[in-house]
Amino acid sequence: PGASDTLTVSGGANLSFVKEFSDEIIGAGSSTTLTFTLTSAAESPSTATGLSFSDDLTTFMAGTSFSINSNTCGGSPGLSAGDTYLNYTGGTLAPGDSCSVVTTVSIPDAATATLGTHTNTTSTLTGTAGGEALVVSAASDTLTVQSALPMVTTKSFSPSTALPGETVTLTYTLTNPDTIRGYTNGTFFTDNY
Image (cartoon, rainbow, N blue to C red; front, top):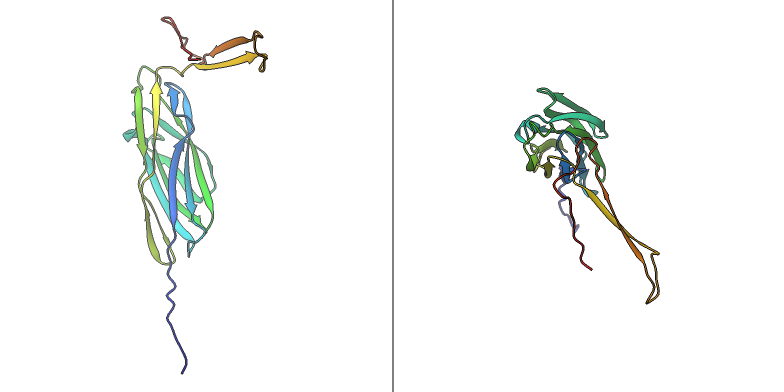
């Protein structure tokens, strides 16, 4: 007698959704890149379509705003509410592919910015794949806003190699990356040898 079995072919897609600020710490009055990345695992059985998510900066920090730099996900990223609300709709993502929506987030100046560490969280990512509804957990990242950009400190030895008993020069370079504000009140640093 012949043998038989049943194979069930299911739809769906295994998606991940992350967002990341290009800076961990930023000075008030400046801007940072915020990238939303959507990825479909290679084993996903179907192409995801109708992908959508939103991000509301008013829940992150008052006075911030978006601008859109690029979009490789298809669909349409739109801004509203004074460029504080990003609404992305209509994205498509094939199995094994990844795409991104890249934005710039502008931070208000020190007079109006709320200093400290802030968490920015999106809505869930939704869509369909192979006739199945998709709901992917919200993405979030944190950004610390200070009254000025943090000072950058570097050090170098000259010469970079030396024999025992030779003298080397250790140079510390302190750079203020903030084009508006300076450092006062006795700037100092320590170094452990």
